[in-house]
Image (cartoon, rainbow, N blue to C red; front, side, top):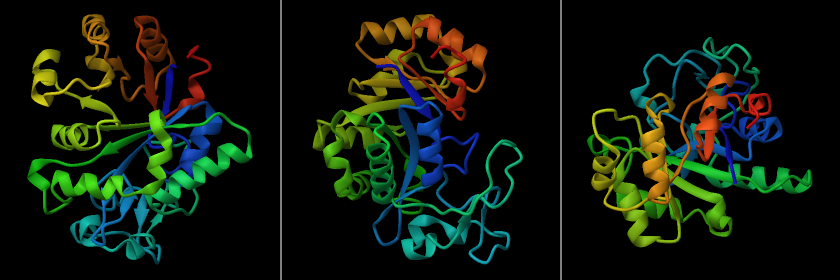
Length: 271
């Protein structure tokens, strides 16, 4: 399988990490949707990129601007309050093709239910979920619980259970990947990287386990790194690739998938 991944659903075309973005990604050419998660104050798993609301594309429930982000950190908010904030009504200058609509940050459970229902109703192939855990040692207790509690909250989402190999959990933070490896060994893991200072072997040594996927920033990926990964039976899905020419080059290099904000470009790239 070649992983054609819609980044944050399809950020180039729809408000990111919303249910409409996931559906648009699937209908635009993605067979995999990528998204980010956080844990709320009341222990629920919400889909959003940052640890707090980003005022670039999110507004207050009444439509006014967000003036101070810190007070709207998800780990300090119950989900019922989070859901009231509006995503997608503001124009996003970096993504001029993005459709403007009124949406919200969904629960992970709700998002999976919606995607599964859509693909089944429209007789589409089942989708793979590339789930990114957002965490760091510096923000433990401030923006998320410690890794073990974080993973237990995540794995309590019952919609994950039937996905099997259609679920890949990735992170830049080695700690949650280590917890999953030891406590939930059947979960497929991906190690995210944007590090040019450490070699592949150094990074994998830091992780301490052999992940199924090594997913680097695409400009840092070389044929040598790709070959070394494949020799170790590790698949490689670089991010975030927007240009059709770059997509073609990476496909020819032999990557196992491509992550893009524009899955509608995969077809023209021959992906």
